[in-house]
Length: 435
Image (tube, rainbow, N blue to C red; front, side, top):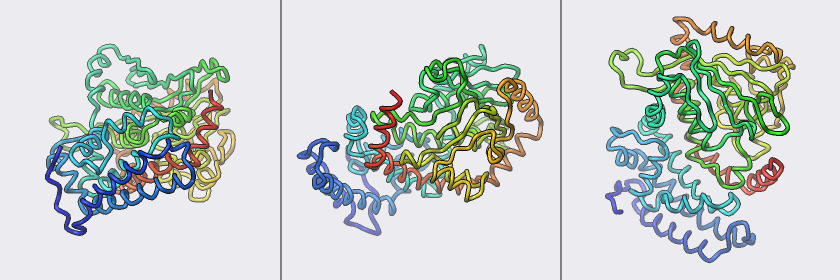
């Protein structure tokens, strides 16, 4: 498909040079063995060709990200979610992003044998999110209800329950009770879990009979924790090793989708909402067992967090070699810089029974008292002024423009990390241990 490209004004030779560099990458890797079998010299040859092409992509997008985004979204009148946006860009600007066919073929490979085409998506999304115009429009688009949630809403309003693969949502006494129910894998996160969580959060926010939300882990069938509740083991390292964790549908959608909605609410067009187009509600999290990695990241956006006295929290992303989502942006607000570095850089585990845990959770409760404590916390958040005050707190603590700037850099840095040789080796070992 051909298209009229934005005319370069800073580096007129960049686009033809980029097309040529992209072809050189394809020619170089075509004669090489798969990545896991390459010699150091062959890896260097592939990396050198890719670096040239990626440098040119960066130059082009630094100059023309707004023009590219406006063309794809018809002057920011069309809302394209992350997956739709990168697919549309790959079609309209061949050579700028990998095609859907190329990504599908690579998705079938283990992480160690991928060429890292998602890094090019990271380059593109960093440029889009870095733009005050395009980035703000993309953030707003990602705050819209998903089509899946809109489709399921009548059923949820009628029955008060929706069962999904990874999450169950039930409405009871005005509370949307979300239960993470991947009982065989300790609620480890993957693309399906992100889709189910965003759907559940949307349903809770869209249902007018819901005034608050609760997130808790269900009882496990995993041999080590059979019959016990567990909050979350974080990212599914086995899936990351096998190549089944995606940059767009997991690592970025998770942050810009349901987690951001927990803070800002969903963006809707409804008559009479001139005072605020967002539907927001207070949220409570209850931690049984542990909140590891992504589970601990989640706690930073809830209005009230309870933890069982025998639970622990940790963010081992640096040990795994990746970035712990937006925790680097949010954690210091709770802990200060020293403790946040101990947790993120050194992997310090925080037990609910130690004093520092009270920095991260509101209440530490004996296991047999969790149910009653949860109901008391939900009752305290059932007030007329809660929504307005949480909105103002979130604006002060996490300004939207600061979040946008963080996510712009995160889009690229996390893409680079998931293809780092150290990560591929580590998750391979961790994944084997979890089998």
